[in-house]
Length: 284
Image 1: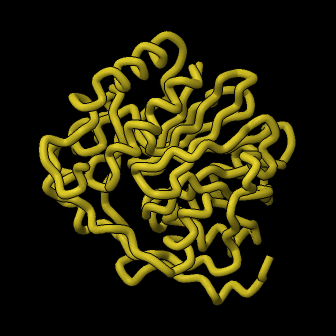
Image 2: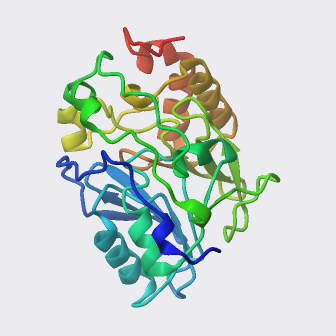
């Protein structure tokens, strides 16, 4: 890994976003080796046995949240713990908000899908958020969210093409585009554990009220940032076909068992009614 830390920067629109939920600061041990923690309005996941200090961080939270993420990791894995890798489901601001500070603190490699790398190496900005979609206040204010590419330089690498996930034995990454071109989800067949990212979520992310309360309901990817709805539909179908038994999503609380099975089937069967906005500039 190139150890020159000066080659990294956030976009010029990078800033703290004063949005939160009642679950901010809460954590849930979803399986003995999977822990989910809510940072304001987004979730991070930590993979690893808490009896030792070897772990992997999945996604990197909101802007200015590095100290919180480090504290969460050290509480679970011990003081001065250091992850083997950071895996990014995608590069939106609320999933990479602290990644540069975490790289600097931990000297850790970052992995993402090859199609996501342009947004993580300063090459390409994300399309503008679509504030015209229906759903609530967060959708309306989405143009104020950071959208410019960040540049991690040589610190970010493409995930292995064979589907394996570095330092996460038993998991494979699955390309689940739609929300972004290089969006991925992580799945472990042994126990049906799914880290879905924003391929689908368990809260209506467009609604400030529902986000604040973390009101649980199956939903498609956040509407204001989703640019390919046909791909998003196919991605949800791909994940439903895996028959996951437990799901950690980028937004909302974990869903498991019969509740997850029933709701994922409902989302695939009623995707147009549940997920698609009534209007929007990215509707296929």
